[in-house]
Image (cartoon, rainbow, N blue to C red; front, top):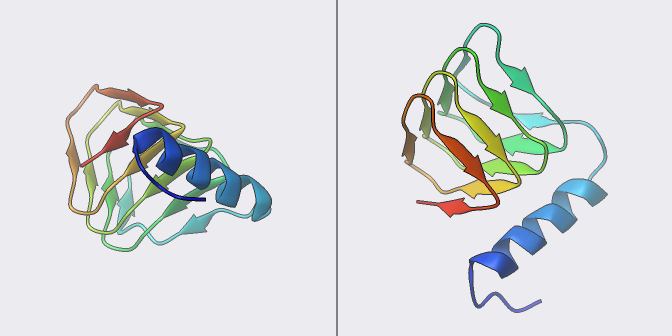
Length: 96
């Protein structure tokens, strides 16, 4: 598959996450209370996730990201060093 736009990256992410089994690949630094992680997903090291979030399904968060409180991320790719502010919803997007 050739990647030419964000939709291609989302499709490739969906494919790899859904064919990789139901075991989440997690290495976040911290996960806040009352946060729900829904597989399939992958979270790289150095990432912090605030309280009250819903992350997944089909989410890839690269390293060193900061996810605020009460954030919804679904069907998305979050590129490294990205900050997602409190209360944001990220659905079907690539965010940098």
